[in-house]
Amino acid sequence: MSFRVATEPGAPGRPNEDFAAATATSAVLLDGVSAPPGVDTGCVHGVARYTRGLGALLLAGADAGLPLREALEEAITTASALHADTCDLRNQESPSATVVAVRVDTDGLEYLVLSDSVLLVEGADGVRVLTDTRLDVLRGELARQGRQGEAVRSYRNVADGFWTAGADPRAAGEALTGTLPVGRFTAMTDGASRVVDVFGDLDWDEAFALVSDRGPRALLRRVRDLEAADPERRKHPRAKGSDDATVLAWTPGD
Image (tube, rainbow, N blue to C red):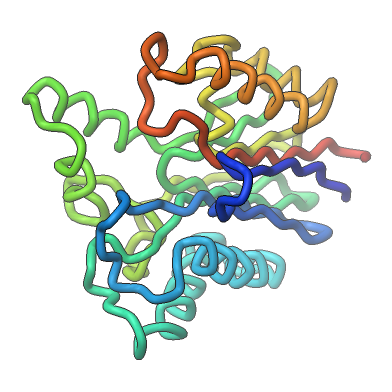
């Protein structure tokens, strides 16, 4: 099997906190969760390093055939243990990541999705959108209460909040999982999916078609053009003017 991947940081010279990798049967895509500038994360290693370590461990577990939830739970446990002696893993701003994991075999396409990265899978009835909407729901509720910003972050990895893959392996149990018939798929971090859910420039079917026809890099170029056209974030409000963006795609028979 062959995978196509495109990734780039939100700004030149800034660490890319996304991660994507694949084996012959499995693929993972992670988006590191950044803390606001000046906020103590309790970790001396940084988000990019944590995301790469977690992603590699998760990919190894998926490729070994572990159920994807189990693979994620083991990856979180191991990644956390590797820096528990040097970092404060009780800090809520400790590095964490959104996750998409996919494994393809003759029985179907197994998937796992945690938090707001997106997996698009082509089926007989069109493109299916798989993403964890709890963060969006929470943001909407807090906005109605006049509470935003730091209030959102206080709900991360707590009951009735939203979950990311950080220091707590219970996050694996909160992931969306399932099996679908084998078909083309595209996974993207929210820095890439903003072409749909922030800018409204494409719908999901159009985004999927763009990646399928012209490759992941074409979608990233489109996102960067949209960001550049609204540098002050007035027309399309967003936390980051330009974000790390990654797209991973697979087509049967490639």
